[in-house]
Amino acid sequence: MASPLLDSVGVENQDGKKVILHKLEPKDNYYSVGRRYNIKPAAIIQFNGNASLRVGQVIKVPTELPFVSSTPIASTTPATEVASNDAVTEYKVSAGETLYAISRRFNIKVEDIISQNNLKSNNLTPGQILKIRSVAATVAPPTPPPAVVQQSTGVPAAKRDSALVAQTDSAANTAERRLPANRYGITERNERGVATYMDDTGLGLDPNKKLVLHRTAPIGTVLKITNPMTNRTTFAKVVGSFTENAATRDVIVVLTKSAADALGALDKRFQVNISYGTPSNE
Image (cartoon, rainbow, N blue to C red; front, side):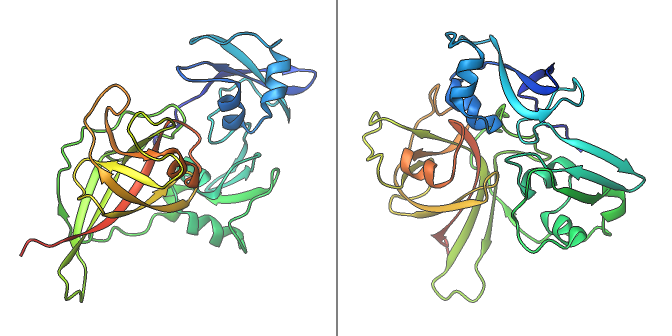
């Protein structure tokens, strides 16, 4: 299983409470760090004496979590406590965690976690204990993959973002299939990769509308966009294409701020899954 990328460089024990040591990256600020660790920005500002921020600086993020160890933690799984018992792992849920993030951590399906713990919904409570069977105990016999036609988008593999867990496959992945029983001859295209958004009018787009720029989709196409980290989906209209520059390097789609907010984006660059229909070439 791929190890998650670490946002923190370690933790400290202060009066029995865990303090996260976070190394600042470009575009980090008190607000984004607070959102990442589910801590109020005002508390981080006060704890660091309202110091000016600079790239590479290590700031301290206070939490109300008990200090357990000095092991660095991942942003998607802050302050976790894990106790293993043979093939079953007892996992303590931390504030802000989702079933999706935990499933990626253990390389199992969300449905498996729900089934193993008889969960009635996707909602989790901080401190809740989940029993998770190991990969070896849950892996089913391999099944043949569905027949798909792979189509290259011409987009390089997306660079991993610090706030995302490592992927086990290519970030820029496009598949297409002929929709069944469709007398209009529509081909469904599915893409997966990195998205970014513009919060100004530099591209001439209305930031209050759900609009996107896409490399190949025709103008007027409506994209179904899903953020796998938040499980939130929105629909946005293609109004043009874009050329690669420093801000759009390795991305597959550029969104307005309204579309990014609808997806619950926490960072300027984040993973998305896209699907849309285009006329088939008969």
